[in-house]
Image (cartoon, rainbow, N blue to C red; front, side, top):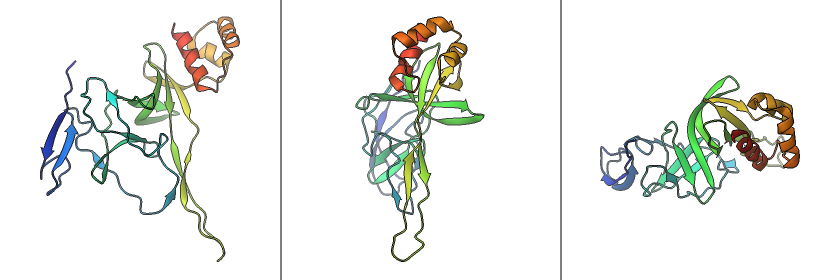
Length: 225
């Protein structure tokens, strides 16, 4: 596998971000993850709440085969983008299929992946919970933009639009085919092609709750053994 190196350099007029006067120290990559990114468009209205499920702070990241000298990132769950900042400007990193971005402080790894679910094809980031050649478990985090309300009298103020977190979606992947995590033992037995009685015994002895993330992880790890 070709080693991916980061180059820290001074970029001028025909540089990464086409800025005519600024001199920037920017980390770039041959595969394009940080190069030629799209500048994030600023909202032209007041929106309450935050599109960031992990907070607004940019965090240190680790990416396999990359130098440690990389831009700090944060995940925008509304736009489904990894953002980084240079000066006062905000940029989206380019999506690179299969790239895994580990946030050590958050104990979370996001994978950039093309996947199909509910008859729709998506290209975005999923939280990788179980990584296995058999069954992998992912979580989709999503923020929705909800409409505010307009005041119908002169005594109350209009309410701004606001971000609201959608329910996390858990997906099981096998051979790049994604399916919603099963709801119960019967569905799990059929989906994973395992003996129902054996699965029932495991679920009962480990008090598995099909709606709790730690139990989902435990179940998929058991299936993969």
